[in-house]
Length: 315
Length: 281
Image (cartoon, rainbow over all chains, first blue to last red; front, top):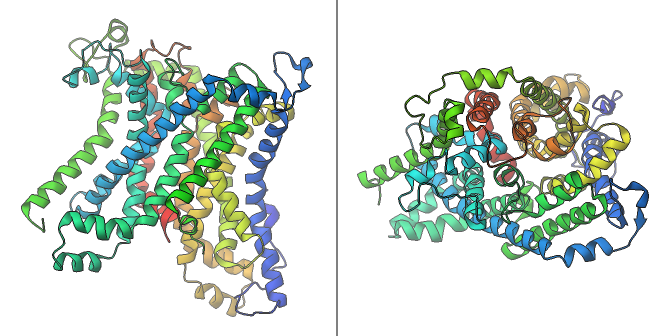
């Protein structure tokens, strides 16, 4: 797949300062297309094509347990899903997890970024350790926290003063969701703080100094100078993390397996397809999940006026 | 606050907080992996193994003796490495074109990459499950390598095109003036200069593939291709409330070692790649 793009005759591809379509521009255009073709094909083969197939499958009544009963049912799967309280409950849980985790990640991540920006000693150690939660497998993080919260083998109950020693965090919806959010926040805050650190590094020191000379307090400098100037970085971080959090699956699978009403939309979709072989219904949920992500992305971009050009570094 | 001692103390406390945040759960899972299995069954609360519940290396030996676990480690290493190499090669070509050439469809590639970076992975599980079974990719290495490639390409392309923009391109022109073809100029001059960026992209791709769980559990059914996160979650049956925690912890620590080694060795590069890929304006 990768060898197909070597342009052996290689006509000179060169600068683009000529306004008219010279031979060079044509050749450059060709070479450019050749070089991006494999990437585009691989990306679309696994996403666009299956998504179109899901769209098609979602319109049929198709279960692997009874493949011969397959029939075209139109929008029936969507009607069933959207009129089922289960779907709306998982949606609520998912959005709740998304809002809570992104909020705490943003606040804690920003504090971490401020510290990392200013710290002079042990820089290497801090940056190395901040990468460990980022690199650790989510499943491992889920296990670590599940056992930490465990009443029989964990330590959280013993360390928290106002919690009974044998309290079962996974017996009820809210404590279980709390534990899931802790695992999620623990793992992804470092990533957030690195993104914010990059934004912080772009805020001009002179401007902060000038505000200081003018008598602005630390708090004023933070809100009036630093934060507005790293707006793009913050918004991009929120967008990325929110969409990532909306897809939450691993932690739920490991920590509660969807018990006590902790199912997310992703988990529900997975359960329909892989555990119950309801390809038709599962595909409908897949499409709904995809549409929800689009809507959330759209809302965040519109509400916060995220500069997407900054996200992909292109004007 | 200024540069007062108060402020210095604040930063020191903050640094300590970060270290605790990052390392406490890691210390916990390591500590857990040294608790004996009998004590876990009976209930052995607390952070450190108590009196008489220290198991030494028993859990590590037991985890490593497990045939499925060893297979899963092998699968994960193989699949992640193949996906990384292929993804980085393809992304390098694309990023070069994006950073350097004017061509139609540049916007399309960037938009596709951005869209895929935000794609809800689970929504592909159904269709891919169906497709892979139809074309025989279900439960094979290739069946995982292909989705890993497409989901790491966006990050790799961003990271690489950010690096490629910083390269002194006069050197390429100089090489061409000296008689090199464009292809030679690309291979002999630019590739060595871009190597650090390529490296970063490779590390991030490897992390993604190593971490993946959704594809790992849904597109495999046996140890023929099941990667380590999926294998860990299936380690002992379906009851999520009563697992042999210490054995799992030992397995988890083993599965984390490659990540820790990579982080320790390439810390600088990873930070640069993460920050340049996503927010650089």
